[in-house]
Length: 104
Image 1 (cartoon, one colour):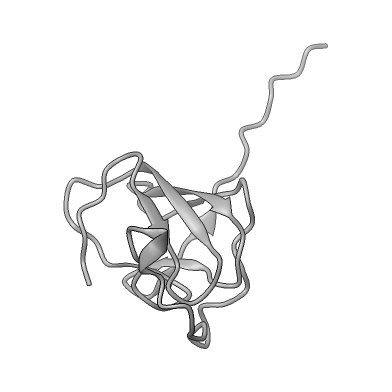
Image 2 (image 1 turned 45 degrees about the vertical axis):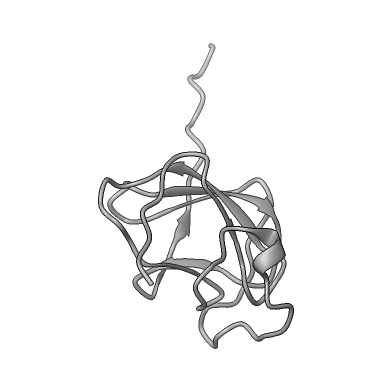
């Protein structure tokens, strides 16, 4: 399912405890999944049962930022869980920290 995201949108996994918040979003609707399953927009809508799809596990770490290859989508993990975020079936990578300048 494709959805239009905007900064501040919260995404809740339907199969695990993972919760994400949108930091940066593309202008066009995209197909985001968490644990291989479409997310819900309200924690109360979670079905409560389900399994992470094979290949979409490995977990999400709280405080980490997940980005797509183009750099148009950035999601912040606000609650860790078993499912990993993906767009169009491709897992998102973690954003690398910027190196601080040397102060010699």
